[in-house]
Image (cartoon, rainbow, N blue to C red; front, side, top):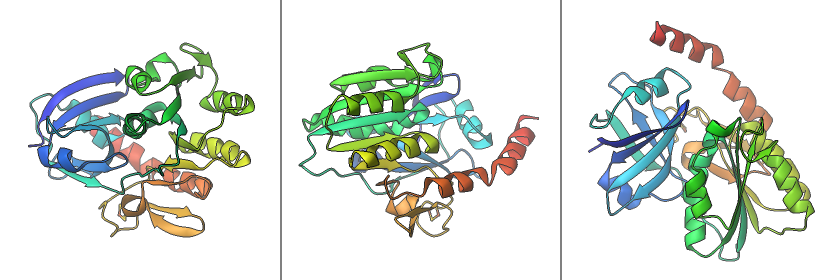
Length: 274
Ligand code: FES
């Protein structure tokens, strides 16, 4: 249990791991996440389930090495075991049968949580246009996987080293201006990207699902660390989400909360690396 069966570097800071976890693989659904601890004293790291295979008994996680704990996780190799691997947590996403055409938008490592949702929709016969983007070509992840489950795939990079130069929102505006109609938009990526997408889709009145990735501690609704304001109400991303109606999320507050621990995170990383 919890053994790392496969490890791949997807870009300079993002790694994929396939974990042996038969019980979780049977229960997992798109939109859910796991909490990982690398060792006994390790921080609890929430990570989206990027894929799962009930027959093989595996769960795929994709993570960006941004701080001390994710770097420690990235150092583990095939054959190593995770100290804790808890899940599936969170509310699985559901789509109404009336949803026939979806626009899926992923930025950076946000494509990882986007993929299982798109895969499920594609399997259910929904027509999908996808836009995925990154800073430059090496930051665009899961291109082949997303292509396989999308009717049309658009790629953008900030520097133009792959696909179109610009942002995912440029293609979004173009598709909408050209008269494309979508029953739903799913947007997952940096907070600022999700905020910008939601501003545009609100104008067009298209329901938009986002997935929030705030700081989490227990992952069970006890600590309040993952709180997000949605439609003026406090929600906990771990038990009420992580997917929410993007038109109701207070992104400015979420961005302020995300920045709150930056100094402490930096200090912990410096101490870990020296
Ligand atoms: Fe503690 Fe969500 S992580 S309430």
